[in-house]
Image 1 (spheres, rainbow, N blue to C red):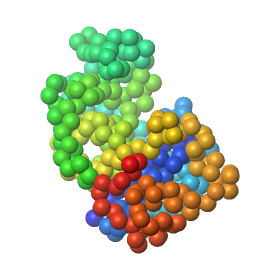
Image 2: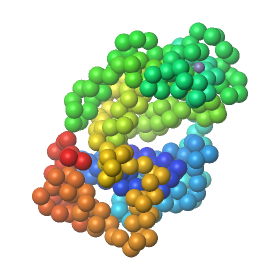
Image 3: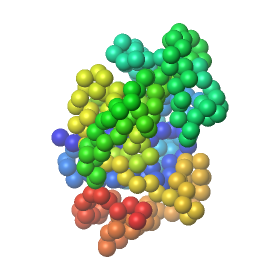
Length: 298
Ligand SMILES: [Zn+2]
């Protein structure tokens, strides 16, 4: 059975790009009679705000999306489903990574990394310093040897080979502030909740590669069999990637202007290259052509 998830982060109001990702995931899961989970990535307590959690539920409701697992309300999210409740699970996973892989401590500030690297890639400054692992203000990085090629099984592109060393270098598994890195938390959740189908933006392709690298380390090869769909990203009129900070395109702003979800679905059907104009999720489910690749942003 197809098991997928939508995984918003409560660090800003959701925008059209997020909604497109959720709708594609929902459509695929419902077409396959699979199961969908809502997971709210709320480990980063500095950026998280309760109104952003509320906004996730409001937006999903406005879109008409439903899901089978995970929280049904902000209150339930906080009480039962917060990732903060799984901190120990992630930390154990990090411990296991330290045992299985070559992990080293890194005390570099972001500005130092920028200064000494090309294109912001980590230059390996602390690789051979042998710094103690468990100190404040210390990140943990995993050593990724050259030619660490992983294969991503992408529904639209087929087998995509990525050299994790080239694109991620020695990536962070625990942040300087002690928070488990996204790669760890996301992978651990996907493994524990038996997710086998993941839809994400193409900006996360290298994260997928990093997560497969980690999963291979644990012998969790099933994660490598996960089907992925990395869709292209919606751009604004200037051709920039849409970000949550661009408040004008938040769906909260749409709702406040009294705009209906119909308008969103009309926009989306155009993006998907559909000849028909859909005004609701169920119309799309019944009629949309879901052959991959979906023609987003062409
Ligand atoms: Zn360093």
